[in-house]
Amino acid sequence: MQLNRDQAILKHMIRYCDEISQTVDTFGNSKDTFASNFIYQNAVALCVLQIGELIDIDILWDTVQYDIPSLKKYCLQYI
Image (tube, rainbow, N blue to C red; front, side, top):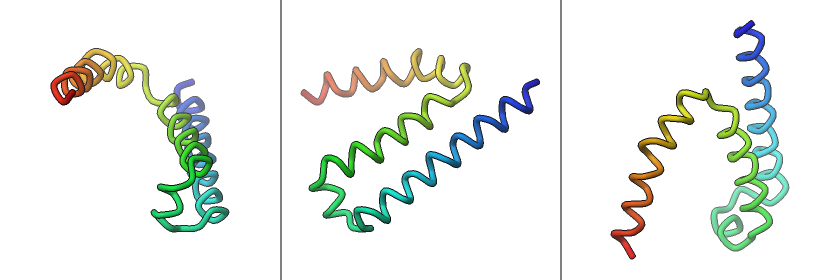
């Protein structure tokens, strides 16, 4: 049942969005605070990572095939 799986994924995404909001509430809605606090950054980054892991397998495969090689090429050119 794809619908149940999609709903479960959306519920997980909502939970991570809520966790990000709670983290911002805890540390403060300041970019300077965010930039200077690695714990704040890591807490938010983990939630974003978790959301990213919930994406469709086709999207993930396309990212692996096209976006990651392009990113690597860009990084290599930059350094």
